[in-house]
Length: 171
Image (cartoon, rainbow, N blue to C red; front, top):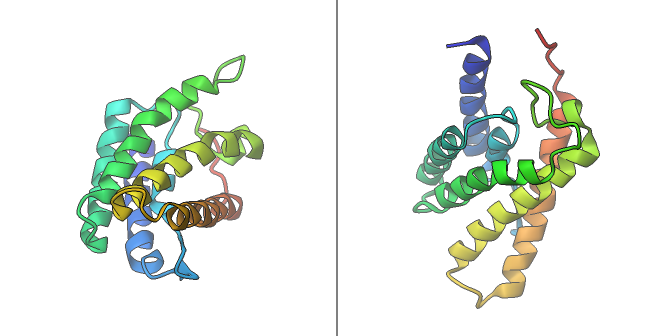
């Protein structure tokens, strides 16, 4: 396994442990939830294979489901986000394309690009997660409030962490 592969495996477990040990009980006003674990899928290299993305999304979501006792909701939402990620990346590809081994981070592409890339994917993740959890549209406005509040909370933490972590040099 290459050095970048080992780093990705370590990051998988770091995001998972932070989610289930620290962020599980962090809820703002009983409305905003932080699902930092989806950042692992968002921040993978741009040319990552769709099958690998969906497998990683399933493993990550299923493991979170075990700790949250949520019967596959996180796995469903994360696999859906992982499936749509490459389609969305191809839709927002810059005119010159992406560099080889490019990552989907703020440091590599800028804040504006990262927000255009990640906001719709995180919104769709939360949309699926909360509406399936609510079992329909009976509490539509409350569910939308949870989606938007969780979107802002999750995105704030993801962006903040990218600014706080030092960027690795390219080798």
